[in-house]
Image (cartoon, rainbow, N blue to C red; front, side, top):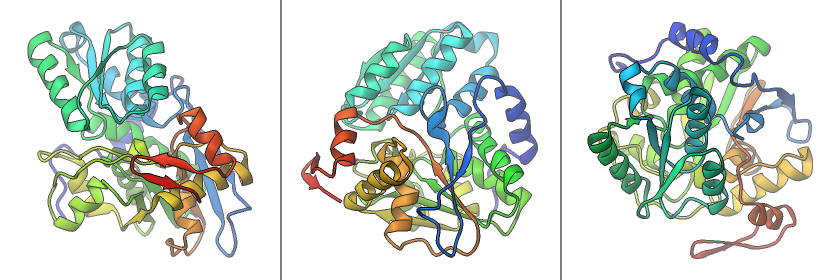
Length: 334
């Protein structure tokens, strides 16, 4: 399938790695013997980034490339939490003001962490679309520069640097399993990985309720979905009806998408803690969750992206202890 004009290339992603070097960690890729059987499983620990999630890669690259005029009014974004934290951190490093708009569905722990980095927080509506509407207003009226959470070439380039690290360390990888939301992470990884190794499989994993990219790919066009509370709250939000890049990239380069129940995500979070002593948010555990649910058909060494650890402490302690948790209108236990 044809990719959009200005789709990032492997060369662009390699340049992004030079930009973010020293500002963003080259995260470890560790063996996961508890999850390996006939197939070797490895975990890419993006949860160890300074802001606790992979989003710092794209935000740092995007802010680096801003012009003086774009920097003048400061930067902003809408976010489900991790992107806002990354933009706040990268903006502070660059000496820029930052405004982050978040819906009511974003957990308070993530909101507090963004505020601690000096960003101006705006709580708007009950969806990411509502938060984006407020950012659009600020762009028009206050000359703010929007740093989109996923549908932007510079953001995609930054996230794609993960694939460079993976395939340099393990060129024998057969599959990369990626948490799937708006598609910035999986798009960047797919572009770089497929350019370096065309036969590698790229699998996206999301939650059953409100999986915008999965539903859009099934429909053959970007569609709106109803957002719902989830353990994988970082995967919430729409992809934008006017999506310019990530939908087309995912349609062209992603081999499969998988959906998980809340109970399956719960079991993934708990397994990462019990077997690997890793604190993970629900979105970061979806690769392990899909593996444990028997939903991944693998054939060769596989990397699972552990995307972040910015989880509400009380919720995580309950999951780690095997206790029930309330997620919206559901009571969930693994």
